[in-house]
Image (cartoon, rainbow, N blue to C red; front, side, top):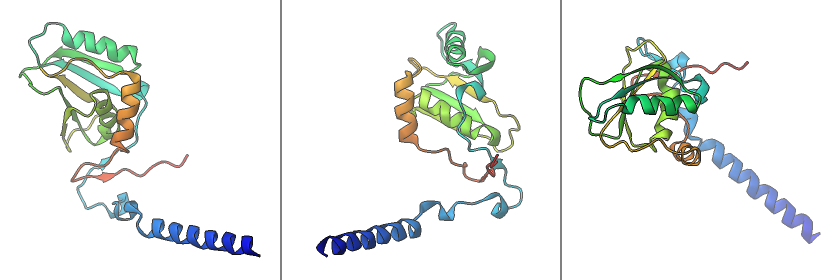
Length: 172
């Protein structure tokens, strides 16, 4: 008899926790494509695999050949490297990631390769899904696989930038 009371009490406590979790769900206020204001772009917040990420690598330092060596490192990690060049202006940051609505999920993954030390520059008018990686004077090396995985855990899921809405997910 006593065991039934304990089991019943545990069931009630579990039910209370479930109800509280559902009521406090932080995703309840997330904008959907249907409620997106007119003119706001839909951001692709799908976290990509390296093989599905297109990057342009630019050297914004005085170190000759840096873009080429980092581009080779990205290729080794299965990224699609499109352009490798020198940047017009020098950058003091570790790196700058430039992307548009179609590159949000890709940029999120790339942030982990810089341990979330890369500055982000979102351009709502950009139409492609390529992310420009501009290497700055603070850059030393890309993160290891273990560091990337830990960083992704710290970063959480990709989110739509301000002034955009998350793109609907295909349920295929």
